[in-house]
Image (cartoon, rainbow over all chains, first blue to last red; front, side):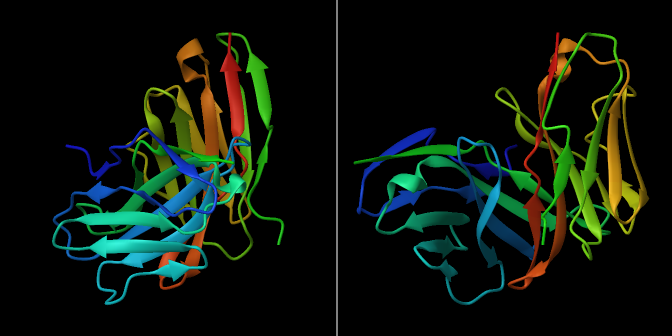
Length: 118
Length: 115
């Protein structure tokens, strides 16, 4: 079963508008973390935002916010006031305890390609 | 802070040749990860190290792949012999605690093409 599901292969948004990128996850671990990374066409992976499973408030980092709905197991990324430079692939990822309990590893979704239109 | 440094950035080789990818993590980061990215399979964790010790190598595709971390500032991923299906971008990442989480910082990646 997929641990991280991103159902939107591609999204378009008008410059200056807000956009929501979907992410759902599957885990039985009560303690986990959710991450969003951005990968522009140049290829590097850039960390955007983090949400811990026990965090009471939704995470925010500048124009990025995470809409965390624990009961629904969703962690959608909201980008406000989109800019042309936001055009990139966006990956949702989860870190949980592996079965042995000794460490954590990061599992990525398949990504959403966001295109910001002028 | 120079970030995670990977070399080479691009490698083109022929099937059967040995390939060695190199990584220098961020100083002070005690965890290092090797990921592979392909169109078909996305981002896959190959192996990771804590304090230079390999913790989980279950993602290493087969015996042709090996990884080492002889010290805290250097790691290698070796493919011998290489095959066309190994063509991918290989990312190295290191982690530290930030915002209450162990955030991975990625290198720029090594794009491998095996002909």
